Image (cartoon, rainbow, N blue to C red; front, side, top):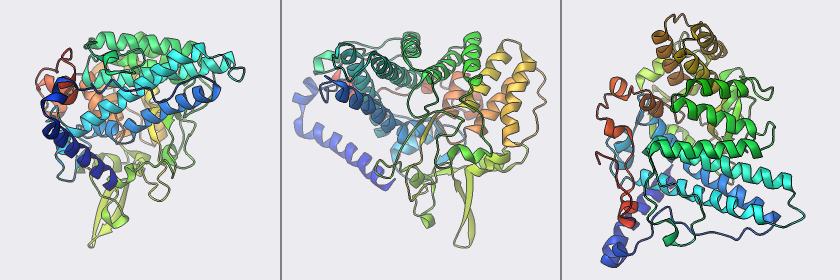
Length: 451
């Protein structure tokens, strides 16, 4: 985390220095963040494969730190244990448009979009005998899926965003596009997922997209759009696949060699391509920074045999100055630094289907799905009887099941419960601010209300 923090601070200092040194000239002729140059020409099989891997790398960049933080830190499971303002703003739900993490996440996400756009534009025209039609379809399907994932995350974070669908090679390419609505943004996600599902192969690859990867994200998209029938249909397709099953014990999800049967999509790291997230969670006695701490209420829930069950493995305890200290243990490979980023898991598909069924009045089936997840965790079956009770039970189950993943904040926003649960009653604060730099660079962009 130390290197990451230094990098963020350095980025902020550079931004300030750039404005002060270059003055009005740069303000009159800046380059918007989403306008990013094409790195390499995609002309043959090798460059097409490399470019596709490059898109995964760019998605990995925003899921390594910034996106999980934006998902769990505004919720009530985790607190920031430090003084850096960019993290405190997120923890306290008081974001500003010049927040470094917001700016960096937005930049990384549009870098991933641009990478996907380059693959989508170039691959169909490649004439290389080493690139078969089948592999072309696979690479295109992966690019469509990854673009869908990024735009889905942009949509749930910022609402409607600029839909850049062609490669950006000069700053003029992206200017003047303006913001689409959230509905239009999600429509684009659906269009990309439809394309991806048609192009991708069937299979059980867990760190690259296959057909069921697209179906799983589509189930989540329909849940966010309150399209309950479709959410149930697509979650069912994934649940019924023989390629996936819940694993026991719960800790097996996040135990090397990773890519468990429960994993639908996770982003792989290695010692040479390190994930430093463990450093945020481990106390200094174990070599970490202890920036993110589980709050007492979350510790109590996870350690309760009737609530957390085997999910207590998300916590670990060490002794500091003679006193026990509890810390988050989802990311724990401090030596290898190869913890994955978890994006889509089968447990979520059961809970998506449970919620969709409850919303349709299929209470018995919804309860059965909820209890599948509870059974894996070794906790008693839920006795929720009414739709209202079931929906609250599912919400609470998601809080525990995905305690340190990028879910809690977005769950409470999409269900309209961020005010009641977190006290964030100003609904304008349920969306993130667009980065200040992009607003200055492109007058066609408008800020979210309240910022």
